[in-house]
Amino acid sequence: MATRKKTSKSRKKRAKRTTAGKKKTARKKAGKKTTRKSKKKATRKKAARKKTARKKAAKKKTAKKKKTKKKKATKKKKTTKKKANRKKAAKKKTAKKKKATKKKANRKKAAKKAAGKKPAKKASGKKASAKKRQGATKSGPFALDTQVKRQKNVAWRMIDGEAVIITPSDSTMHTLNDVGTRIWELMTGERSLREVAQMLCAEFEVDKERAEKDTIWFVECLAKKGLVENS
Image (cartoon, rainbow, N blue to C red; front, side):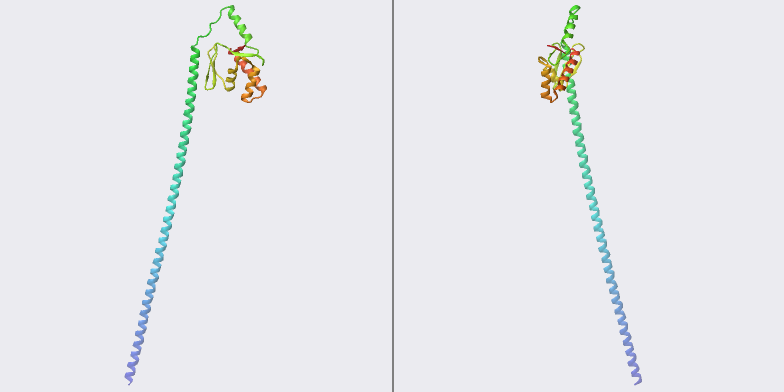
């Protein structure tokens, strides 16, 4: 009986040991499973983080590329605009140069034509002195009531709205401005200087006193060069 009790106790102990061992192994397996799951989760998280980081980097690269493209496009536009403006300025300069050259050519042609005309013969002796005296009396002094006309032997022509006059004595060319050309046109010997000044006041919106002074001064300058005389 004693031996049977011992065997039963030993069996119970063995059974307890086996159950404890099984529990340990089960616990180990469960721990391994949990560790594997946690490792998989960690790896998945890392992979997700890497993907998000890659996506962010790709977005940044695309944004930078877009910015660089926009900058290049704006630079190209600016350069094209600058080139167009430079071309326009160059065209304007060339047009101005052409106009200036045309004006010079027309003035030279007028001077040649005027120089081609035969000048009046000089009077000799007493006749020349008499003519000089008459010219001196005709050329001044000038008042507002005097009527002035252009001399017949003076060559002149209108070029681009400006009067080009050539003095007969030394064949020098003189170009007049707008006011000067208008006074030159009005000096036909039929109007007085006062009437000429009144017409200038109406056309150029100038004060009466200033117009009268300017006309007298201008006529005196022309008379000194031998271009006008009293009618």
